[in-house]
Structures are given as C-alpha cells and as structure tokens.
Length: 517
Image (cartoon, rainbow, N blue to C red; front, side, top):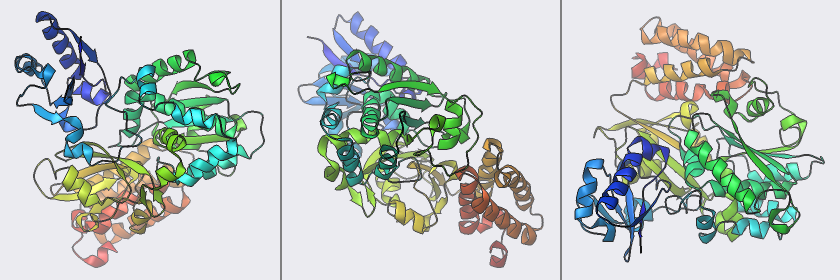
C-alpha cells in the first residue's frame, strides 16, 4: 500500500522550492523501491516552514519543514514516511500552536486536500452548502447570508446579504455574478491561496450566489499575475461541469449557472468594482460614476453581484451549517472569521484565520513572533497600499471593522505589513502617494493631478524645504483627494500619508509640533 506524501503546489511554496522537493522525494522513493502517492496540496499558510512536507501515518499527518533538496535523503534514512524522528520533524500538523489556535472556516480544507480533486472536495463537506441551497427558496438563501452577518471581505465591508437582496429584487431577464479576484494589495495573498488551494469552494460559493439572485452567468476576474490560480480554477471548473455542478441543469434541478475565468491586464484600479466591469466589457478600466449601483445596473447594464474571493468562499459553510453558526464567531458587527496575512519584517509570515476580535498585538507577537530582525516593530500597514500606518500605541486595537474605523484606519482585506524601527515613514508615505499617481485611471482631477502634486510636495518636505509651508499644503492636498476622488484609490491615499505624518512627524523633519498640525 502506497504512502500519501503531501507537498504544496501553492505558488509561494513553489517560489521557496516546493517543486524541487516534490521531484526529489519522487526520485528518492523510486531509487529505494518505495511506493508513494505524492499529492500536491495547498499551503497551510505557515510560510516560514515552507516547503512543508506532510506524511500520512497511523498517528495522523506528520509534518517536516522547511525542507530543502539536500534534506530529502536524510529524511528517508530517518524513516519519515512512518513519522520517523528528524531535526525537521514538527510533529502532528494539527497540534502546532500556530495552527490549532486558529478558527479555520473558509480555509478548513486548504492544505489538507488535493485542490483539483472533486472527490477530495466532496469527501470533506464540499457541495453540502449548494445541496441545501438547491432545496431552498431564493429569499431563504439570501436570508441565511444576511443572518450570518457576512460583510464584504474586499475592503468596504458592505453587508453581503443586502447586496444580494438588491439584485434578487431588481427585475431583469439577465443577471450576473462577478468574483473580484484582482487581488492587487501589497501584503495580501488570501484570495490566491483559496484559488490555488481550494478552487471548488469559490465555484460553489458563486453557484449559490447565482441561484440565490437568479443569475445564470458568473465571471471570475483574475489578476494576470496569478498563473497557478488560473490553471487550478480552469481545471476545477471543467470538473464541476462534468459532474453536473455547473451548467444548464445543476444536479438535475433545472437550475442553471455558467462560470468562466477572465484575466485582467495588471491595472490596480480594476480592483474597483465599476472599473472591473468596464474591463470585463472590453473597455478601458475607468471608474464609473455612481449611482446607479452595480446591484441595479452593473455588467452590461444588468443587475450584478460583485463580491471578492473570501466573501464568496465563505458562503458554502453558511449554507451548510446555517447563518447562526457563522454569526457566532466574531464581535460587534464584525461576524465570522477573517484570514489575516502577515508579511514584511516579521519572523513568522503567513496566513492565520481567526474570528474577529483578536488584537493586532496578539497577531504580531503571539503568532508573528515579532520582527524578523529582532528590532522593535515601529509600524504596521493594514489594508494594503491605501491602508493607514498604525504605531505601537494602537497595537491593542481589536481586529474589528468598527474598532479600526474609530482610529481612522481600515481593516480592508486583512493584509498586515510590518516595519521595524529602521523604517523611514516619510519615504513610505511618498511611495504610497506615488503608487496613487502611477495607478490612477485619470478620470477624476483630484486623483490624477492631486497625487502628482503630492509627490512634488513630499519631495520638498523630505529634502527639508519650507516645512512650515509644505506640511499644511500636503494636508490640503490630502483633504482634496479624500473628499473629491471618484473611488477609493484617490480617496484612501490620504490614509497612509496622513497617518505616517501624524504618528511619525520626526521622520518628516518636523521638530515643532505646530508644523505637523
């Protein structure tokens, strides 16, 4: 009987050598006449331990990592195929503190299964949510999602049930479901991990959404920089069609839903829903004026649900276990779980899924292990390149939408980028302003012109020129961007710039506190 050995096919694991490890294990087993079944799974998200190799033994799945090609022969000598002791042995993967202290709902399967095996998906509670949805009325499906308290996981945190209900009650012969998979924020990778590690859960979530609102066509708008996700999604979609989980007659119910992947062309602004729809329609990615809202007049002028990957991937468990089950996780108006992604200067980078309520300090030190350099953490940027910089004094903020908003910060997509005390916050703030200037679609003047003038003003500040004049000018520019931009690209650029200035004025050459005001 062959032994199951798991090596991740996650693109981050591949970048760390997972393909080479898989090949080396296969060759070593062949040379020793040992029969193994090598399975390429998704990553568990513990990236400081990648490439992570897992072996199924009588005592459960035993993990070894981080494994290098030079370690493979010694692993066989140590009888790792039966859980043998080795310096890279981590024990039972489920018993690792980093893993067992999480609340994995959306990521429950990722790392445990072959991502493109429909049999694996079905054997691990897959399509149970869709099975329940097919027996319910559209209104009941939408009510379950509403009752769960699920909010958009892409940044705006808009209640998912309200959006679905609007589309459901807007009369139209054609409606659409769009998955915004244009994950362009720095330090974020949860969407990619779902699409590479459990693509069926996204397909199932979109299918449920389509049935709920009466949409028979869905599109996954995928960023072009995700080739591994593209391959996994297309393979899974093909199998879903073959098994009757997509098509004109889903599981013999007469209900239809079709799905395809469309690639973006690398524009950050196409992560904004209206710009995304322009791109899907074959036009230049420019932000649309609102109203009308996409839920009423979206893709090709038809009612459209636009949700991001994590939002849609959270739907199957809600329909499987009920809205109340999901709502019981979290705090306040932030219900369920959020996949938090730790990157930057951090000892233990990776993805951790928790119910809302954990503090930033707990995430950074209990799970992240502090900075990789061992120096004090000076600031963290939460929510991508448009997110605010939080100083140490705000590290006890619970990870909750309202708690972050109270600090004039955003939780966004859950990406957390860490900086130690050597970071120059003025230089980082300038980068954020430059990012806006480069990625602006150019449709509105505040974003197009304001960001360019902002770079010029910041250069003068960094060079120590007329600080007392340029600081108020920078604030005035930020106010214009904040209140006059058409979309969040220009509207949120002031968050990192002003938070850096407010919390770290000394990095801007400000010695007199009146200059920072």
